Image (cartoon, rainbow, N blue to C red; front, top):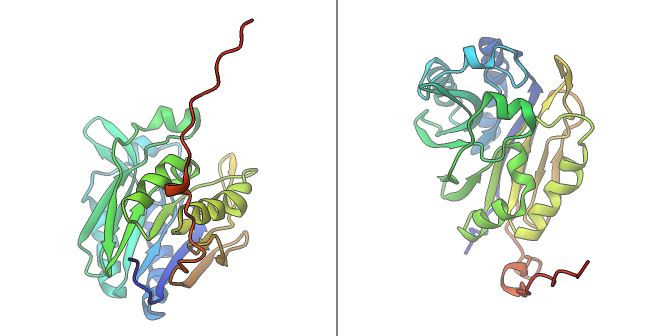
Length: 265
């Protein structure tokens, strides 16, 4: 059974560092400190926040797991006393992955995830897809990690909900005109699968992309607990305990039916 006590969380919506990872860390530091000071157990940062989602030097700038970015982010976690979920471009030998690392409030790595659903030809050209799901326990709560396009696929959300996840932590780099994802898709996924979702987007413009902003924290019944506008924002919210009378029962109610018979031409 989920813990009935509220759980304070945070997310950071900011502009892409556009290839300047040091600038990204400098922007992230005050957000992480503020989240920790406010009592948040974790903060979710956007997709590929280091070195920047739309950098044309992504392949050259990508770093190995445990590299300089990791060490710098780990120090920020220790200073803030807050866990961090950070999207970054990961180099593993000759391959590059769209990844997210989870660090505890002591800076230790707790989990690592590689994006499964690559979006569009640009991501397919840069990245190799991940091959497995990732769950992590933070302050006694089980969370699943997805990245951007992943959360738009109900089977991925359903799998993590069935594994007992109370929340999904989702770094993202959603761009215009796809505002429906934060406004409609994410709340619907939360309600249909009975878990909270933290969807942390970029904002502003980077190269030929304008990010949609609109980062959102949804509760387990699809309720919007906090939503960002189009500019930089730090969202902090208490995830409410789920109401058993309101939780979706779709998983046990699903009726399996055979596909329709093909019609003769």
